[in-house]
Image 1 (cartoon, rainbow, N blue to C red):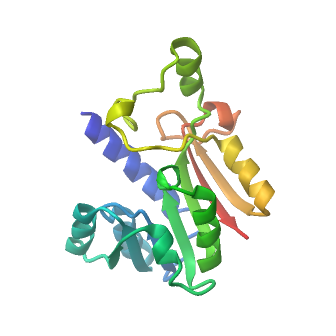
Image 2: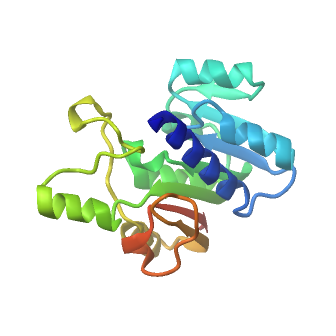
Length: 204
């Protein structure tokens, strides 16, 4: 049941990413591509020239099974191989929070891509704040169902943190889509407090 809800939410955010400025036949690099579901949709709907990168061998195998060109390895090492603006679009969808040096990776993505789409869980969401304030515990939900001791390291940041980062680095946010708690509908009111997931289209 939880896995089904996670997959449903993932499909919704994938569709939002597709609708966030990606053009037909763009050259697209997906960093942390997982099993290649997003790239598969992009190839089908936008006929993009796709390349995925993921460090997990099982996920890379699934990409190959789907016919998605993929490279297994660390995203930072892969980015070094590409010249400036080699791609029309670089995607970081639910990847940034798992990176060792998120700021460095985003800036490298902006170097190799004319535009970058970043999608992330907003840890400034009010439920997360209340759980820490009232219980002193992090939120356990469909997105992060495992206790901290069974989870990979995650960098917790909010929409406000990301906007501050962009402002400090001279990064332009062209479009911002904030989704509600269920990642279904757009959240326009107090998004740093009330949105659960954020997608930004950025460039340098």
